[in-house]
Length: 170
Ligand SMILES: CC(C)(COP(=O)(O)OP(=O)(O)OC[C@H]1O[C@@H](n2cnc3c(N)ncnc32)[C@H](O)[C@@H]1OP(=O)(O)O)[C@@H](O)C(=O)NCCC(=O)NCCS
Image 1 (cartoon, protein in one colour):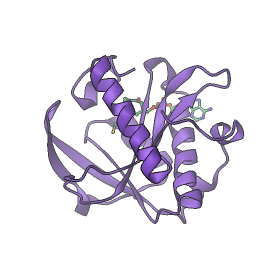
Image 2 (tube, rainbow, N blue to C red):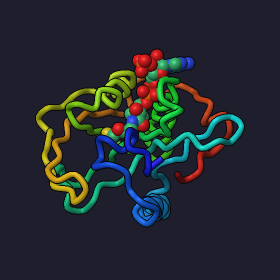
Image 3 (spheres, helix red, strand yellow):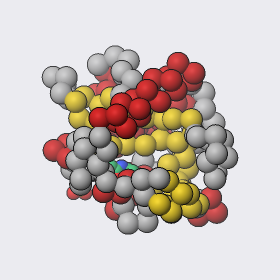
Image 4 (cartoon, protein in one colour):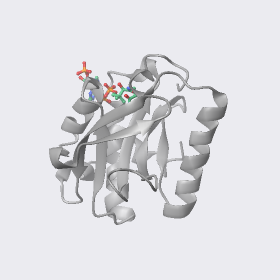
């Protein structure tokens, strides 16, 4: 997934095995620290479809300390509702089990598919928190910010991810 040019278009292009493994290590460390992270998204028969889940922010993030939900799917899994379904389950877990008070999401202005997921989740756009950050992989990156709180009804939806039991770190 992380080696696919179209999947990684918005994020500085494909990355290799070492960089991909480093991300997984970061997710595992977050799971140890917080009890949640990016979760693996799988089909009912166990095929890997991608990830969705909440991560604590990097120390030096321009938004300051926060929790951020992200999603990424293998190209063949786009257009089937899996990202939205998995994000609902991850937000439900973040609010109902982990007790977070707020989760943000951000994406670049031209990432139409990611923005559509935020809309489907009924996340609230918060332009006052838009930011720019410098990343080695992409240079200066502009992030538009959306916010979710525990009271919003979509996160209470049940999902296939939850029916299968606890999600695995992804
Ligand atoms: C962003 C990303 C995860 C969105 O995936 P997605 O499949 O478009 O999003 P959803 O899971 O919400 O699926 C919605 C689509 O599935 C369709 N769909 C088909 N069956 C469906 C069903 N049973 N239920 C719901 N939607 C369904 C919807 O109509 C919609 O189609 P459309 O794109 O033609 O409007 C994906 O494009 C991706 O991995 N991009 C690369 C990584 C990335 O940019 N991540 C975000 C960084 S900020």
